[in-house]
Image (cartoon, rainbow, N blue to C red; front, side):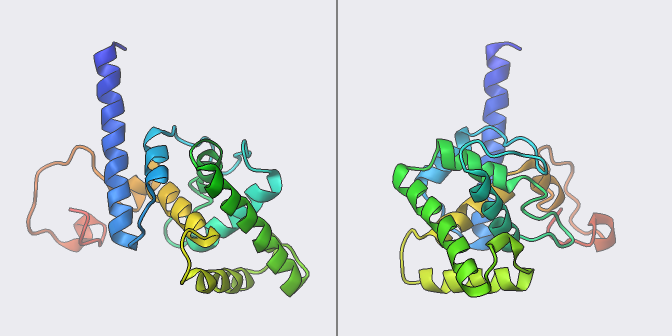
Length: 199
């Protein structure tokens, strides 16, 4: 592959990521910090959805990240955060692109999640039921409403960013078409997967 082809390929991938970030921001109203945007534009795809191992987080932190991310974006009729490798993405962003002070916020927040879970239920976070996990995360979200750059803000940003910039979600959830075909103004919804916004 020559240099010009490689440059065009990298530019195309960057444009796809920019589009995915823009869509995630519009859909969910999440404002991403500049450090996260810089990181995601440079980061390679986090490898392996289901069997990924942590590189920068500890095994315990990685397990909590997976549990939290899955409650933020659980599997429904579309893939959940775990299905598309969001924990591996967060691990990569944590180790390579977060500022040291943001790393401290995330690490302290993960420890707080488990400590709060143990205090309330005598179980670590990943052993709780989905309803108990939701209640604990709701409590954290409420506590962070009047504060800036808390753990909950950080983990939500990372989860949403990892989810909506992955190829699987782009193709199956957002139905992103990098080379769109002809425009058909009036089509029966059944012909476009019963989604009014895909064509």
